Figure 1 (cartoon, rainbow, N blue to C red):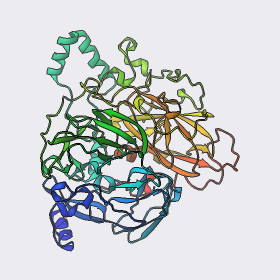
Figure 2: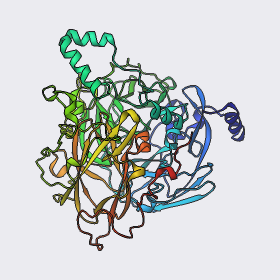
Figure 3: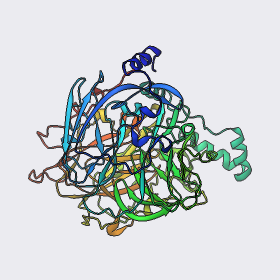
Figure 4: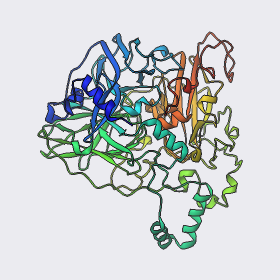
Length: 605
């Protein structure tokens, strides 16, 4: 919570508030404030300062933690292969950090306190130096405490060294985010006290009567008994909702009407970044198709869709080609339909598109818990069920397989029948009357650089006790892990993830891309973040190229903070550890002590 004294004091130090537009970097301002797209802010040396400063959000004053006094942070733009220097000064009274999301940097430049470096202490300047062999749309954010919720995030674009395969006439960056005037540590405390503190979409008696009319009283009652037996709700879709969040596009709420311009017939490139703390968005432009040309910074074969679900930390570049001289709405709707942010694209600055009505709240079904009605002979069968099953691809390699997960204090449920859901459009988008992206639709533009078959498979379970707001991998919270996941330099590994929770999790691996096993042959999409749906079992193939310790976590901020995080250690080739060895003697990082995030900006009330 921001006190009036704190707000006024900081405002005086900065010369008082200068108006909403001046609190935004040039790239994030609307066309009515002079942003016509195609800005060229390039360089190789950047000075960034992390501080607290006043902001105006949705017409209300607040205090942000961010970079160079802007929310979102400044656009960083450079060229593939250039040697980049970024001097980051910490003006906070607590540690901070910047992680370069999706960039293939040396691990000591990755910016994760407790994993790759100790963090940036108050008053210190840390120099990041790296050159990256990639181009595309990325972003950066704090990996310290809950600073990301307070505005510590910004876009990062890397121009290709050669010819860009995507042609366009102008471009805009669209950073999606969620903002709360509540202190994020208070939000976390409320979630720990009652995990449904922000969920006001539970089903009601009228919903039961409607189901009974459609399905019969017995079936409606039986289904509710199932959910009750699991101590879950079919409306547990988002932990933190519009009850506290203001949803933003480039720092603007819907009422602010961020707007971009186009000339009819132009190809406009939108670089869309989901920089939210906790919000998965449904993105659409009613009446205007979008052609996806990049996913997570890497080119994909052009794919025209009308809507896509976008996990936290994913990025998509799309091309729009508006032919009519009219206003089009760009809609970012929260997955639980508790709110949305709407921007406008039109032929003139300041135009305002119609704001569509919110669509009905989605309801989860038994498939979201990897169950079907025929298998439901009582929830007692969930205890100790053997979840081993054939891999969707028929792949038979296994290591540390399924039965290791048992119910316990931190594992409330173990799914019975996990399945591949890559061909599904995303929660709540199953029945929309237009084209929706499915992960099985994505194909990389270029052939995959490594087409070797995986040498071994590692299985990772996404686990939770939602009532106690405990989130983990394999039932072990980050503060309790004693060994990382081991990769060996040069090997090809298949990681299979099984989601034993009833929520979507955008899972992110630092330091390397993974190939999503989606039936794409040698054109599997290469990503750094993937949504794992409830009850889903999916696989990614990884080439272990970059030695070091890399964070691996759910990108829902409070899930990560509560424990859904691990470390992947890529060991050098010359250290000939036998496969399956958990942790080599003398490996200096990733010990329990160094990986305890409560040592680095942990709990604060």
